[in-house]
Amino acid sequence: MIITNLHKEPVALDTVVHRDLRMKSVGNDAHLLAPFTSFMITIGEFAECAREYPILFVRAAPENGKETVAPVAVFGLKPGENLFLKDGAWTGNYLPAMLRSYPFTMARIEGSDRWAMVFDGACVGLNRTEGQPLFNENGEATEYLNDLHRFVQQIEQDIERTRQACALLLEKKLLKPMRFDATLANGETLSVDGFMTLDEEAMSKLPDTEIATLFRSGLLHVTMTHHLSLGNMRKLLDMRLKQQTETQGQTH
Image (cartoon, rainbow, N blue to C red; front, top):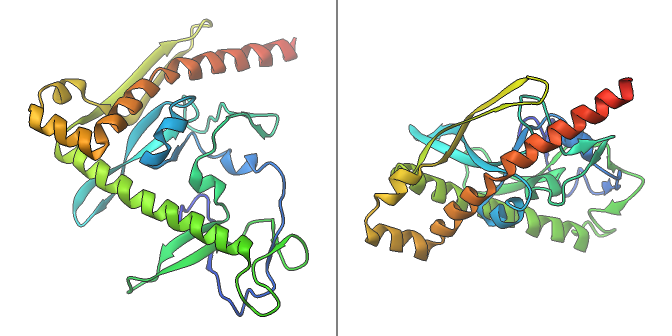
């Protein structure tokens, strides 16, 4: 999946044109996360993400005229805020898979059912002189590239599973708009909206047979993990207060 504000210059990987391309580690890629107050995750990442981020749902682009949603890990409480960035470094313990796979991803070839491996041509780590080679002297993919390919393929499979799970949540009308309001010690008020969360009342009204179906499909566990993750909204608030206090202390 190409994410436009992450993959700035998507380019399909070509075994001839990019035969001598290399990937150099550029250290902490925290700068990539600066624009993101939240970032898309897959349902397979819920358990890891729920340990430190609130997991919410956002409306996504309609598909075939139908409403869609996607789960996201939330990093901040207002637009443009990322509380897990400090002094140019990422302080979170878990990084979503699509960020870990950067600058590589998969994209469907237009007018075809086939997929191509794509990279961000704007990535500073990609060059032709230093780092891990993508192809060997015979033009064959290196083990490094093969590992990357397997990883981004797995992500795409997880994205499809996530789409199906979210479609079922919408079909069962189990999501509702969410609003989070808080007042800070200095009197500043915060309101977080634009997200969706589990509708517990709607869930409680489901027939036992549907609950059993959700359990067997694994979706019941997904909804409960999402629900438990909401406790991290308080964690974000505490992080924000701490950062504000530290900033004020530096100005005095």
